[in-house]
Image 1 (cartoon, rainbow, N blue to C red):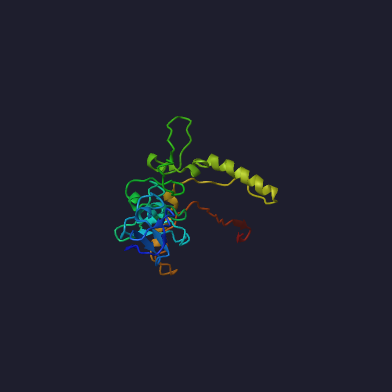
Image 2 (cartoon, rainbow, N blue to C red):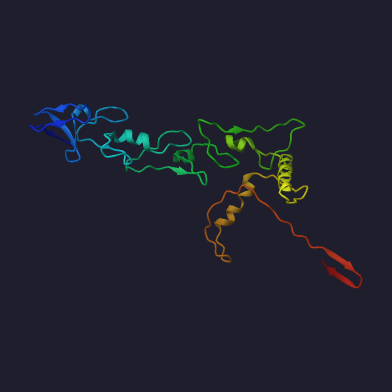
Length: 253
């Protein structure tokens, strides 16, 4: 963008549609294809004048002749990613780079400062707590009829996001109810399942103990520095050996 002196050539302002009279200053863009009165060259967001010889930008997804121009700061207010925690725009730093962190699987984008400011995570799915939608905190009950909580269940680790709070399972009794519904569904499909299954409820930390194994080099299987995992559940199998006593010796079945 530059300012030049007007001449006898007829020039029409792309802002107001009026003619730029000879001898007037005007702003010209794209080799003179677009011209403005200096006071008509404005930001499409804040509508403030874009001064001469200052940086501005256009939306690369819009037509070059759409006439939508922005202050650089205004453009970032529209198109920069929004933090999922504080909902502020994450703007470029002094080097022009936008820095942010991302949660595994859920791809939540958030300011790096929230990694250190005590922002809570859902203890079930690990999603970060949004200030617009606070997590639900499950209070422990000390009443005589209260059901036992899973191992490791504490007040500091009982924050649940709203999605997980709708289907939270805290006791083996809750799981048994769900299993019965699941079994009825499979029976209708002709699949037979056991009447009951042993269920053990543990905290996420117990499931994630496998992380330590992933980070330890193992020369036997060749895995080195395997990625971190967030284990959501674990199914255990059981193998039994039956010894049958027979006359004249032992037999194994």
